[in-house]
Structures are given as structure tokens and as C-alpha cells.
Amino acid sequence: MKFQCACCDEIVEGIPTFGWDYPIHYLDVPEAERPERVFLTSDLCVIDDKWFFVRGCLEIPVIGHDDPFIWGVWVSLSEDNFFEFQDLLEVKERSKFGPYFGWFSASINIYPETLNLKTKVHIRDDGVRPYIELEPTDHPLALEQKQGISVQRVSEIYANRVHGKKIA
Image (cartoon, rainbow, N blue to C red; front, side, top):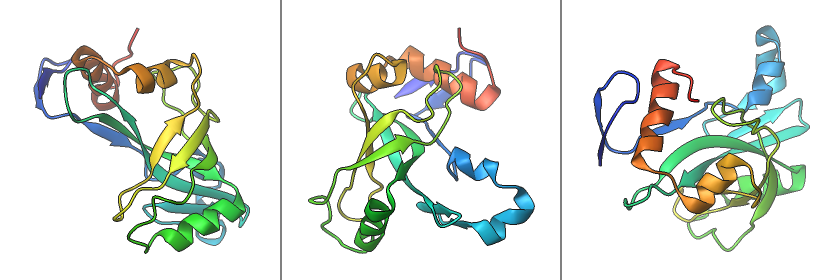
């Protein structure tokens, strides 16, 4: 797939993916305190031994294309579910476990507030990051996940994430 950036007219090959290296709650911890208060890997985060997060893929179908657009996001889990999830990281066939309820732990600026949307975290086999499913609501992000987006919408998201262009 190719598309033209809605901001700079650059031709972009493939469907981009955007994500975060940590849950938004990480920013609530003063930088000087993070080494003591935060455990963070590329897939797991624990803050103050009481807030538990996993990283996953919120996939949005792109109409007319096989590959989805992916937001790499963080979701909070209960302590019990987090430790079960963590124990399964090395298990090859783990998709039979879960899904786990979680709270969306990212704020995506091109949508009405996304923080704390209800989710289900679906574990996938072979070390693939979990699939994040939003609760069916009328929130635009949930609707896009259910209905898919156009290539033009991918172009708008790209312009926002790469160039900071505000989307109307």
C-alpha cells in the first residue's frame, strides 16, 4: 500500500504503526524517582508495586487492505491478571488464556479522550504482542476498530503523528 501524507505530500510505503514506550501513568512519576518506583520493559510496566500494565496492539482494519493499522498501546491489568500474563510470556501456545479486562492507558490526541476506555487483552501465541479489543461503544476509536478506516484516514493519522498536524 502507498499513500500520500496529508501534510507534506510525501509518498509513504506501507501501513505505519505508532505506539508508546510506556503507559501514560509513567509520566506521573517524577523522573528522578522512576528508577526506584518503576519497573519497565518493552512489554511490561509496574509502578509503585500496585499499578500493572502490559503493551499490546490495537489493530484497526484498513479498508481494502490485508494488513491493519496498529496503535502500540498500554493497558492496565489487575495484579492477579498481570502476574498470570507475565508467567505466560515464555509459553509458546498461550492464546487459550484470557482474555483479561483492562483499562486503556494511553491518550491519543486525535480522538476524544481515550484514557481509561474499557478493553479486553487477548494473548496471542508465539511471542506476538497481545491484541487489544476496545469495548464496543460509540467512541470514535472503538468505531474505527470495528468498522475499519480508509487510506485517507491513515494519511491523516500519519500527518498528525509525524508532523503534529491537527486533524479536524
